[in-house]
Length: 243
Image (cartoon, rainbow, N blue to C red; front, side, top):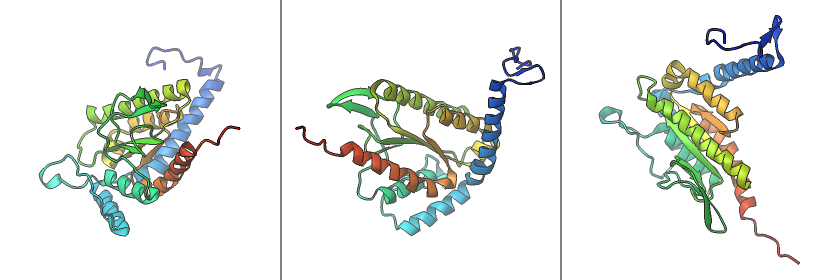
């Protein structure tokens, strides 16, 4: 704080931490532990992502179309993390509809009238981009060689969506779950670790319900989709007749 020319006595005073300073130290310790012990081991490179993708594809005998990445020539391949999310969500939700490639903005309606439309398109919505129970974004960067502005912009796009959903819940009492799936060890851990800190911060600020890292999709998706199905059932449950 001193190096930045800012006051620090609200954090450290008379030789010891203030209550706020102690709280911040506890949070920074927690965040470092989470990143080192949970996030880092789950992040994959393109080869391990490909191996996991092929393993899940074979196990599920998945017949649906898998989107391709945006690379060219020898780098052209299935979008491994996107494909994993699509296959595992499909397995978990059964016959329920799900939009894995929304071409429209997410909208929430009341009595058929749109009351909110998000500013940007997301990567998936359950069961639909109209009145979704959950939406998600996928940030996979297996072929990047630096942490560029495009990657950084993706983090703040997630923040924007979270702020819009927070306002929706505060003003209309409508909850839409918001998830972030991301992967590539080099991009996120070697180059963009400070942005992983921001993502953990966003979760604790309530802008993202959960960030799911790399191979964590295998265990996380069955758990979170169970919550989606319960919320969908409660949402569509018929209203009992009045007396």
